[in-house]
Length: 334
Image 1: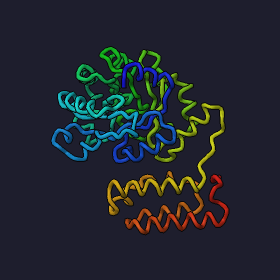
Image 2: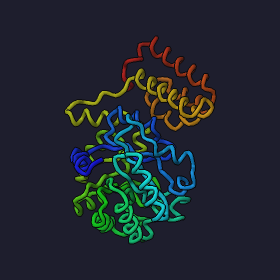
Image 3: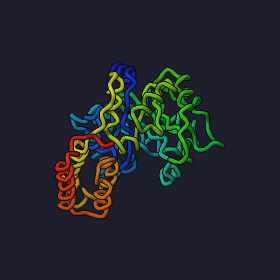
Image 4: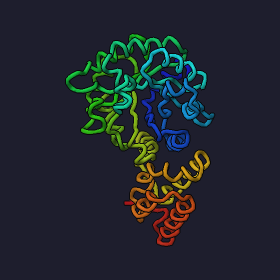
């Protein structure tokens, strides 16, 4: 993505699908993009695994023509390896390259990757500067407001420093690393960061609905909003943001659309992962697809203990037939 295109993208206050390991694969990205996501992020690309020849890490760099614009997110603790993988990522043709400085998972942060960079913010800034110099694509950073309340480098100062070394945008998850996903995200930190810099700041954390997107952008003045768990729970949120921005009332998906998309997603995972792995992998999406669907809770409870593709397809078809016969097929839940 050119510098002008990058600037134009963020001028529209985009809504972005977050990078999520074992979630934001190419299949889910295509679904979210079709539903209105402006930009999608890959799963985390582990620089150590990639440089050791891991086939799964290599696959994350492959972006199809219908899987754009997508940002590749890389993570690691070694600046030289991050630079090397940034160059490899650039060759894959992403919209931009994002550096993960926010993953709070202890096994990652303890070794200095992800949120581990927040222990040494000066080193984080120096690392980001090296990556910026190594590639021609825009480079962005995703981080948290700090490790914890007692050892936080003010996110405002960090944002300024990253801007100074050429980082083109900053995503702020508005919790500390020690909080994980507990407690409430404090959007005020993203607002302070955006007020202090000229580059786009994307706000992340506790954004689950289209109304949340409107509220967080109004309250913070941020250039964009990023959804992670909210998109898993309700991928239609992107479409609903578009509707609100156009002055329309969002129409919730009817059972026909929910079950149809579940069926489509399942078959795509079968093609990508094989029959034996598709069902277990799809369990993480079931709550979102079946939310509010009559009989959905029972179907989810059954499928959470089933690995047979035939069973999945038969059970989904049975619920479709039951709802259709009762006239509850095209009617949105609620």
